[in-house]
Every structure is written in C-alpha cells, then in structure tokens.
Image 1: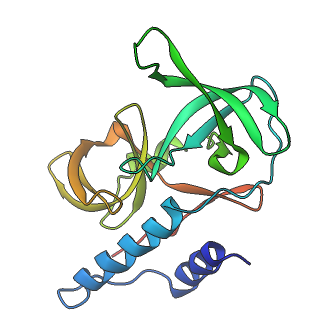
Image 2: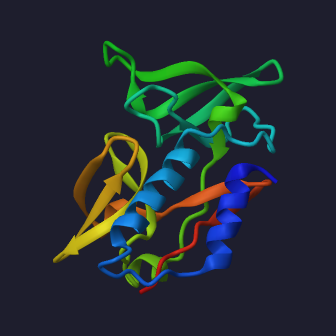
Length: 187
C-alpha cells in the first residue's frame, strides 16, 4: 500500500471531523499537507494508453504543480512515455495546440462525469475539489463560501480564490486502476 493510499484510508476511517474554533486551523494545515502530498506524487502506471485516448496530464512545472490539463494521446514512445497534444494549452507562438512528450507517471485517464446531484447539493467547508481555471483543473479545498461563490484554497500556491459552482468538481484520485473520491468533510 502506497503512502497516499494509506493516508486516504486513514481519512476514510477517521470519518468527518467536526470543525470548531479549536481545530479549524489544524484541519486547514492537515488538508494542505495532504493535498501537497497528492499533488507532488506521480501517477500509478496501471493503464496502457492508446493513440486517441483522452487523458489528463499532471503538470510537473513549478507553480503549476497540482494542476491537470486535458490532452489526447498521439502515440506511445517506448514503455514509459507518450507524445500528447493538449486541448487547452497552446504553443509559445499560439499557432496551435501544444504537443510534448510526457512520462506515463504524469498521465491519468479523464475522470468520469460526476452525477449532477453531487454539485447540485453544493460544496461544504473542506471538501476537496478541482477548479477549472487557467486552462486546467487545479486541486484544492473549499475554505469558505460567500453567496454563490465558493472560496478554494490551493496549498501548492497558497492562493485563496472565489469561484462559481459550475467551475468546480469533487476531486477524485486514480488508485489501483479505479477512480476514488476523497472523503468529504460534513459538519
């Protein structure tokens, strides 16, 4: 069992933690460290991708760690690399979609569409989410809500930014060849 799987299992076993004045800062710090550990990990290589497969590619660039970008597999290169074409990232001269070679450990399948009722029920404090911003999906957690805006804290950049619900999805991790939701905190 990997360290990430162990941490995920521990969070699932512990269950929801009631947020109080005493432990809210501690919970914020714990979630920040947990998200950083996930954002900096390499994907398990549990799937061989074929030409034309739709994938998400984890950025390995400082300042972009914790973000995923939609891409298409152009071709496998050896056993551990793929040539991909991004859907939203452009070349430096903006003449077309960016193509590059990436390691298999930076690629995961596209997460399944989420049940419409998940997002209709809304997000709660400390739910782990992905936000679609700056051409990719960024991993963080709900740090507050004002009106219809959900504030998301991104531990890898220390930003806390408000987003409308339609730009959010519950975060899922690719573990042992299956998608798993991270535990949700319910007060």
